[in-house]
Image (cartoon, rainbow, N blue to C red):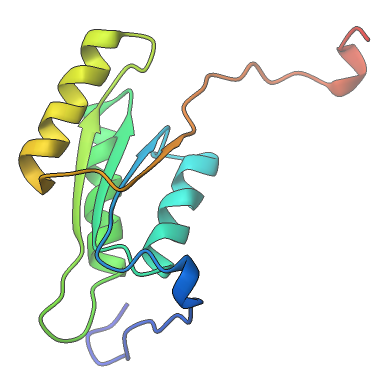
Length: 126
């Protein structure tokens, strides 16, 4: 987005607003998790934790969200990328400790992490 272009403006019903909420999404580096992050940001979220298996990917995606969703005025998007293996309780606890240290709380969580084997629907046994 060029610097001279207007920032995005989204309309959200007040009852669905995520204004000033701290949102956490697992599996957020791609797919549905990525889209859940976009939805939170479009609904007013200004603090976002992007969780996925690979730290480099989470950091890059968090940086992208912060840059593309920058708001006019004083408010900025504070997005953090955290490597997290949701199959490991220790990894999840460490991720949430980092989130709590950074943001102080969690208001919404979407558990979207998963590993999918891609195959033809015709090959699936009913």
